[in-house]
Length: 498
Image: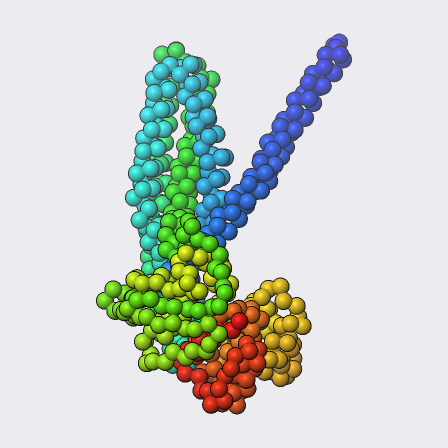
């Protein structure tokens, strides 16, 4: 038998080329998919970073009342979930919805062109029924997901609150109570999550029933066509494959809409933070504070945290420039409130507060707060070194300046005794050092800031008498104020230095 070797070579070449092309196509599909993911990662992470940054910045600019009335654990959990939801939303919109719409249109078009409008109408009806069922069921499931998110926020808040107040838990032997409180929040999250899972099972089963019914109807129509001779077996196979091809975008559509809805719910708390109005902010005509002498004047100031409980009523007094003034009174009489009003943590309900004749509501917050230094009742410290906590008063300060301030407030002996010296971590909220050491650190931070107006809110309450008198001499020397030798600090000494 004669064999045409040229024909065999041609067939082999064509077959080899086809096999190579198939492999190249498979690799190309994976390669371009990974390239797409790599490019999208840059876009999505940039969006996440911007949203997280904007949210964090807004939280820092929120009013004090907002932070006092919300739980930190819940806020941080909401930010974590919300930023992750951003990536899911972008992925769903870019990679799924547009390609799915194109694929469904192609399948319906082929069915209509090859086999008539009946097949295309059935395919369209299936898609419509599938979409309506998915949207309605997902909307019904939304409340379960929202309950799960709220329970998750609550559990995170309880956990963070318990850990921050670890000492209080131990002092009163309430580990069991805190654990039970946390478990109660977890139980709410568990119940809500079970509802989310069971409703998801119902959604998936319903989606599968709709698609299976459509597939059965189309295959029956195709078999009828084969029997009457209008369709071939090949047509039946093609219809089957097209319907199965339709299942892929429909499944994507269902899962994408579900994930999109869930991501939007996870982002809900994040958007709520953005919607909370900021009451304490610069007025459109605000100008920098111009300090000349530093006189502080209250004119008929009335203020209340709650309308039913007024704190100040028509308060009128003047703090002369260059003077040291002590404000005394029983607890809850409004001593700390005066500090918060001058610092503009709150705005007065009536009257006005003037510094050198300038209403503090008419000057920029940055310039106002830059010129005021505060040692609060409770010293806020970062979980960082002693050195960096002092440097927080003026971030540009050198190590020598920071160490000098530590010497002035008598922290140098403590630093020398510590194994890591000034690089010792003070712990969460400064729990690794004593109350008196916290107050001295806060004073060092204030002295480093070198603000013209200084507020001391029970700044020496945790110090022994000897250390207190030594610090008062240091403050008198540093701030160049004429302290009387028999001065005993009461409540809030408000010290002004120029």
